[in-house]
Image (cartoon, rainbow, N blue to C red; front, side, top):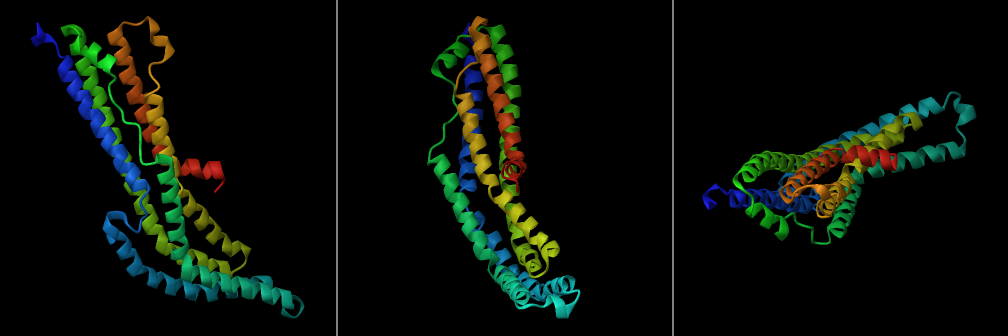
Length: 280
């Protein structure tokens, strides 16, 4: 009897979950290609812009302090060490430090725009959507009561995992925006260390590396999601040839869920992956 067939319920559940995942992916691609300046209508960036002058003022003051520290550390014997080229090098370093302190936000805006454009090129305005193939949908609809009950239980479990992964995906993207917005004002203080010697200026190098790793994190996230959908839409693995049709569908759903979970793990570790791959 049709009353004991749950294929229609299973299809509705899977279509709902896949629709949720597709919406999350579309939202994530939109956010990854968006500059922090436009995030949430520009409200958070407005707060950062209001705070930035305070950090610039502090950074400008620290430039002089770090310059003195660098001068003292490099001038053990003033008469012997204070040659023209040494003074010129210190003055250039002082000028660069002051310029980076005053214009660090302008540099960051250029990086945000470049990364957003790169993500837009990767997505090209279209992403592969997850869906149940027509032949698999037909198999699910024709399942008997026993098989359909088992399929329904496992589909519900896999659906919960996919929904949790979808929320983790959004959380990771939002957390990236939070990191970017928080570290932007700190750039003025970090770049003020350029006025000192090499040991002190290492802070500016470390900050620049961290900023680039967080900014380029969006590119790795986009690549991970694109590869996820490509793997899922590649079809069943070769070892399923001897299984029954309903078992093949179940294996496919499990593989799909595993790939989605793997993608979320890659997205969460995107910053570490960028740092290791590029040495920053």
